[in-house]
Image 1 (cartoon, one colour):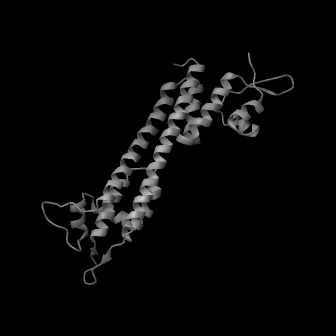
Image 2 (cartoon, one colour):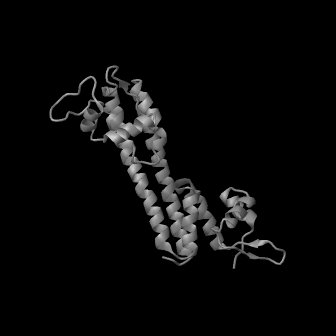
Image 3 (cartoon, helix red, strand yellow):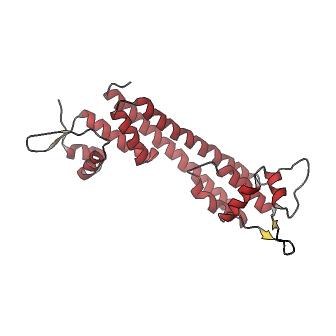
Length: 234
């Protein structure tokens, strides 16, 4: 059987030998045998684990990658594959939401409801009916600082403008995503300041990042399949 020195694997993966020991301590790589002098004896199987860990982490994150590899060590491929599948589904949702957001930014003409045009100022109830968003959600987004409507000086009611409506439509598109939330405030701030081109640029950059993450995920999946082949789990 061919044994690999830690430095050989470290050089291939372009990491330090101490990183290999860290991965081993996490319990995501089987403990290697030891030589008489105490040196670790890594095998082709260990190399496959390390390759998988390094390939999956950029697309799936270290935490989920470790969970996947622990399932693989227990020969539970179904559990591992479903974890991966769920992350791919989430990324697909993020991609769809980002594309919808870009479409909305490229066409900011507001829709009509029952052939009625929007008024210059609308109450929270009117906005809720217009956008299909509940009043409780609108209040929550205001509390989070995503919306800042003015108040009627006579009765204290919220007064929403067409800019607020566009922001609500954007939030409605973005709220179901995980990855895209980090860009939400910047996009909304740009819309509020009529900087539509900047909002488009932020959205386009986010889409490119989603595409890059998707490529990382497939590289990781490839190495996961190779590891399963090495373990004869497929």
